Length: 407
Image 1: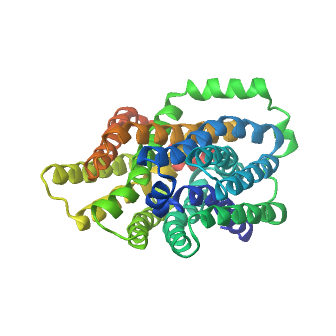
Image 2: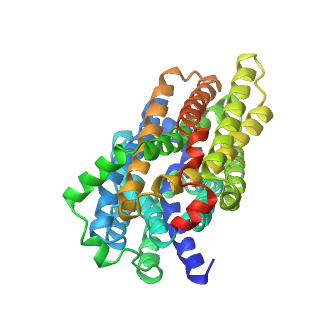
């Protein structure tokens, strides 16, 4: 990878870290926020779901806008909106205000999440895109390692409101990086073919492409299992298992490390095996790990070390799934990469919010509802993957040789 490619990947990764930090950094403080506002767990979870829904739906607009006006201008707007929302969260007087400002944060974050993936597709295709996407994912995945640790430290020393103050600073830093370090990757000649009608046309094409839908659903439902963990793990790990906020942050980081390690092998595997084979093996492994954990919990074996190890395995398999599906979904849609990235992102976050909402009524202070929700997502992914990514598809264009020719 050239120096320019490495620089672009680092800057794009740092920009995409802003949104995950907005999700992960305040997780250790959720019980404290619940107490200080006199709110319920469901109300505090709504601050997470409002952010996720805003990110998901907003990407439907941010993606086409990046196709029409270039990648950088929508990124500027998104960072400014995110900055305003972060300041609002910092001074929120009620849980309702916090939820509203989190919604505003999400509307800004949607551009920050969707556009870097489209920029990867602007720059590369095939295994090179997978390698760059994996590097971006690695930088992106540092956030679940660092964010809860930083958040627990800040909450302990200066209070949870300072967490959102730091997010405002990160957004301001993102504006500086965008201005000084990141080039425009979508030329004016490509934008001339984009517009509102073209956006609707592109969405119609994407929604009528079974291949795109299959890999998007696999990515989205797999990621929904992780959002179930995000929405519930803070309460379970701290209340049920008695961990401190810092201890919870360390447990959370283990899953991120597992994801980072596996995601970094995806590009290499793609050079020797088809993306479909990588995905197929990963979804089988993910389903086996989650069903084993669910079986143990149902049998009354509720040991924290087992939960930690098996969840790390689950999210490790996800490290194979997500980079492969993102590349595979957009491989046939180079001319509408922004729109394709937006639709994938919408499915990801809408699915995540729906999964958190579905599990929420069953929360009882034990890990069983959370684990059952994660297992349900893994089983759905397995069924979709085995049906839609069958062996007959191996004859299509996604063998390593065909993908290099397409590049």
